[in-house]
Image (cartoon, rainbow, N blue to C red):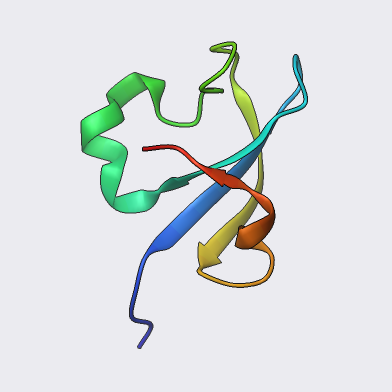
Length: 62
């Protein structure tokens, strides 16, 4: 069993930003979940998983 936050990590095709959303915030963000926090474009999912070296490369959206 995994403990801790699970993230979905994205990159933006439009502005190049790398960002992540905690999966437990899907309900809070609704249809905006996965969108770039800077430009609002849909992101490309690159990685999904717990806190790890891979997720540390992405800025967390809160």
